Image 1 (cartoon, rainbow, N blue to C red):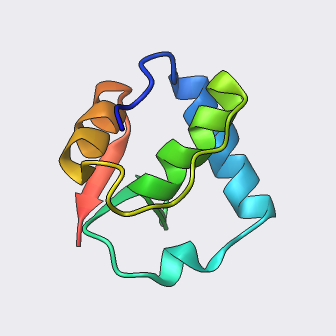
Image 2: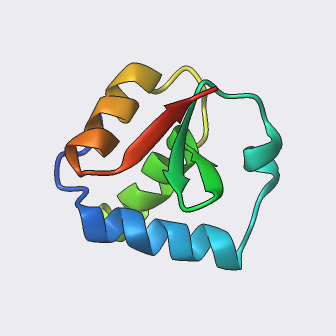
Length: 86
């Protein structure tokens, strides 16, 4: 599934607030790339899935086969976010 190009920086920031208020166990799962905000890391897949809800009104499922992590990383970097590799 392609990343919706109408996901903007403000949607990502809303996603971070949402994840902080309603944490999931997704952060504990092993992933390769993480969005780094301060000292907290967020799995890029979770961020993109939730950000799609803020941009398009549809929450995407967390299917690891649906997204290309490299594309998610590059998209978040294009929005001037720091993405780290673990």
